[in-house]
Length: 235
Image (tube, rainbow, N blue to C red; front, side, top):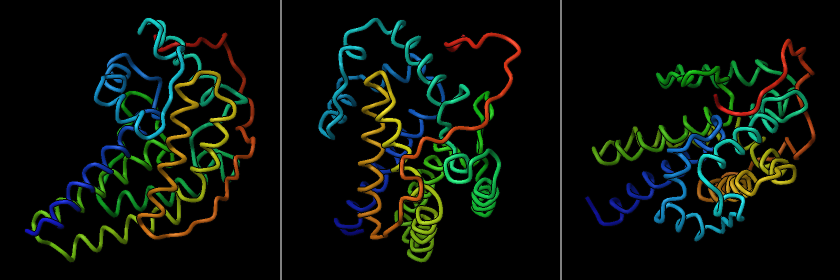
């Protein structure tokens, strides 16, 4: 294996890691172990290098309080009526379980990937699911190259590009711009900025052009009737 091939494989694994990190940010209310890993010296330094600048509401606050604050904001941003679910069909088609969900589910099934719900209901076209799928595709591409399977590596590259063009490329940038605007805490503001920049970088690396059909529009699902007061937090 050439030095160049080894570097490409290493880069694919690295990119997959960033996909997984961003998927984790938006998957659910951040838990203490996730935040500890994110704010670990090595990871935090890598985030700073990418331009992430958390404020004191993240850096100078007790971890338990930070978890509670972010759980509340996650609920208000992504779950509560009037919020902005990180779901493609909501962002582009105005409601849950629209065509986008069926399309991505078919792609996952074709690649024999099952989206795990981690204890809560995850839509197949949720941001975390789409980024998680791409992370798996990059890891499989790296594995194919490690085994000198050029045909499979090329096929996976096409799957990745097609998926970006048909799905996350159409809505993630606008969604990230919106969350950057409405987030009260620097955690979601900065991670949304990173998501936007990462998306632009990936589209450039993949040499594909996709229109941002989302455009950062203020769109929310229809209000639902609450039978009991909504609680913030991850209890």
